[in-house]
Image (cartoon, rainbow, N blue to C red):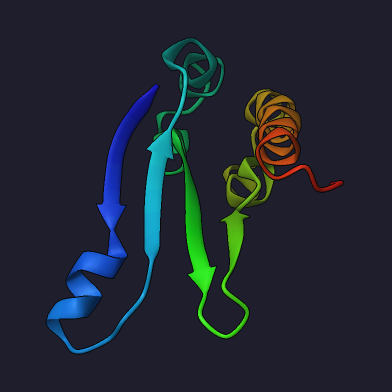
Length: 103
């Protein structure tokens, strides 16, 4: 489910920069629940964010994301960590599927 899209290219054009870049906030409420039920602070990083941008010099597209487990490591909650690691695997699989690259 897509929750939010930020078109960074649109606002960058307003300050004289040319870029093709969008940030997407995506997630599944049922997966988010597996973390939020143990610590509501996990909501700072769930749903997850993906950044898709074009590299101007090479005109290639780059997909960037942070692994949820690394973002939530400061919560010190084993159940959140376990759920976040499962989400890591899903996010990596999505990135591999979308780009055709290996993880």
